[in-house]
Structures are given as C-alpha cells and as structure tokens.
Length: 551
Image (cartoon, rainbow, N blue to C red):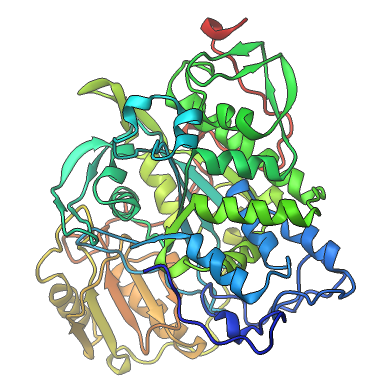
C-alpha cells in the first residue's frame, strides 16, 4: 500500500502542522542533549516547514542542500512550502518495499550511553529498463523485461554521535552467498545460492539485497534507498553540476562518457555516464567504477556545502516529482518527512569526517571474472563499522584515552545478576546450541552465582556485555574481565534492564573468549590500505584513465 494514514489539514491552503504530517522525531535516535540550531546557524529549526514569508526561508533552503543527489530534492521539500495535498501526492510517488526478505535478521545496533544509535543505510543503484526513459539512458532494449540488477551497492554508516560517516562499496562482481529470500508480494521463494551480489535484487527486490549485506558483513541494516537511471540524471541536474577529474582524455563507448584531461563539471546525463563508466577507468573492472563513484559523491557533498542554490519554485516542484518517482525506500522510511529527517541527520557530519572505502577483495579462485572478500582485511572493515569505529583513523585519540574508573565500584560477584543470551546465530551461521547455558555455568564457577540464561532469540556478530545505567558499569566490567573480554565489549545500552551478556558469532566455542576476537589491537582504529579509503575533503583525487580508452 502506498497510502499513509494522516490527519485532516487545519485550514484550506495552509501549511500542515507537524502532527498533521506524521512527524516522528524518534526515528533516528537524536542526541537528546543537542541544542536546536538558531535561524542563523548551520541547520534548520525543528518543528516543521517554514511558513511562507518567514524571514530567512531562502537560506533555509540552501542549508538543506547538504548531501548527495538522491536525497537533495527530498530535503528541499522540507522547506518548499508544499501544500498538504501535494505532500500526500509526493508520498504516493515513493516506491515502498519490505526492508529484509531473509529468514534471519540481525538485531539492531544498541544505543550508546547518550541514547544515540548508529545508522546504517544501504544505497542501491538499479539498472532497471522498465521505462522508456531508462531504456534511452541505459540502452540494452533487450533487457527491458529483465529483472533489474543492483549495480551500485554502498552501505552508508553514520556514527551514533553523528561525528563521522563511513561509506563502504561492494563491487557488483563480488561473489557472495545470497540467502533464501521470500517475496512478500507474490510469495515466491528464492533458495540460497552463490552468485554475484548485484543479482540479489532479482530475488524478490531490495529486501533480499539487505539480507545479503547482513549475511556478508554482520552489520544490521536500518534502511535502504534505491534509485534508477532517470532518477540519477534528474538529481544531478538539481545541483547544477559536479566537478570531476581525469588524468587523460577518456572515451568509454559502453557508457558514452567523453571528457578531456583535467577537471570538468558534469551534470545530467553526463553524470550518469560517469557513475556507470567501468571500462574507461583504471583496469576496466568494477573496482575503478566504485572509486569514480566515491569521487563523485565527495565532490557533490563539497558542492552542496559550499552553497549550491536551487531557488526556482517551478524547478523545485519538477525535481520533487522526479525524485519521489525515482526512489524506492523501505516502509520505515516511506514518507517525505522521514527522508527530510534523515537528511538533517546526515548533514551534521563534516566533510572532513566522511570516508569512502571499497571492500578489500581478492580474485575469485573459482571464476576469474569475479572477486571475493579479502580474508582478514574485509572482516576488519566490517568489524570497525559494527563497533562504530570511524574508518578515517581519527578515532584513535578518543580510543587511546584511559577509560575513567566506574562511578560505582563493582558489587561482590555473588550479588551481580547476569542475563546470558545466545547470539551466535547469524544469517551465515546457525546458532550454536547450548552456548548461553555453557557460559552461564562458567560464570557461576567464577563466582557470579546469579548468572541465568534467557532464551530470547538473538543475533550478534560481536560478544557484548551491556549495562543500563552508569552505576552498573563496574559490574559489567567485572563480568567482562572474568571472561577475558576486552573493555570495548562493555557498552551502555538503554535497551537492557540489567547486566546482559550476549554471546556473539565471534565466540562459538570454548569458555574463554578467544584472543583473536574482538578489539584491542594497535591498528584497530585504522582501515587497512586495501580498503582504498578516500577522505571527503580530498580535492586532489583524479581518476586514472584506462590506456585502452584514451582519445
């Protein structure tokens, strides 16, 4: 269903109140102690769209333009003064689908001590030829009736405190295990298979791509956003062009991209050509294309933060139509207002703390045309995201600080109730039977005689000890120390009521936590070189042109 239940507007022609639009500020775990931006500050005041004629509205529109093309027009709508019926019309334009079509779904990320929660969004670029415009832009008319592939896949991770953002691309040719997925529209069941990750979209829709990412990375996905060819063109037009650089004249006959050496400003269809170019960059593989997409996104962010303007009301309305028709999102993100709130969250991250990276990879030994995750390095990148550690290495100082002593020392072991849960089951592995009981028994032997099991199904990549309030932190540290867990495994969480130990997939056997698991190494706060990380403030980046595509 595309219709959302809403309140009746107060008066004809008036802008709706916040409650009329179904605003939901609890969606993204905002910092409860954050100050509201002033009208002259870097962000909009919360509480709804500005009324017509309110001083500073044009500047408000400019402030919204903070992020990449797929979100840009939707953010503009937050201050465009659209009437209530038009707002509902735009909501109806949005495509909506189920978030996860797999049988196993990961637990959501736990909030930190301030009640803030990390945010993970899967960005998908569909190669659908389902419309005349998509056929014109994408070619391959013979593919018009083919199910689309997700040729662009990026996971956007926003830290709990919104201080940094990491974007990880997985190249389309990566061979992965695509889990069993069930299409909720027609009931079709797609069995588990080994295939390239871009084909996951064909197994019931974007919800199967989400299930595949959770299986591959162990990172819980909160939302997805998917856009097609025509949508990319419309979004790129909105910002008036993005600067890109190539180190030689390039012509890619497959994508149609033709540029001279040096910097060019691209928009519209040429922007789509840049994002689709594969053969013209580096070694002609999808790795070069992923790097080009990172450069484009970084340049887009810099353009928007530098003050890109979009003030023509007619163009805004046309853009709003195109944007909402081009986007498919999960049902939890299925209104313009929720997308607007998401944009406000994203714009809080400074460009200097945005890191674009590619999953470390090696050639697939079973198929030279494919790649697979690089053992060790790929898991390290995924683990950093799971632990809300920035890929840019700038969390080092924060991590190096000596943790303060608990405000309340640990109680005697026999007086500490501990709830033990089995979280060893993930999308890739079945749970290990009896793990919670085994570890609870071990705790009892260590003196924690009030340890007890909880059979509530859990799924956790990393073992954690959570506590609900600062006075219990000492108790949680005592439990972790007894089992050999690193201090980084001890976390404040508002979702637990007492000391709660969840045995993760990193501890599937034995009663002593393995030294090779978890955090604590000297390089834990630095992404491996194989991730090919690019900082959002790097203006010197220039794509290397494939010698076979020089003109």
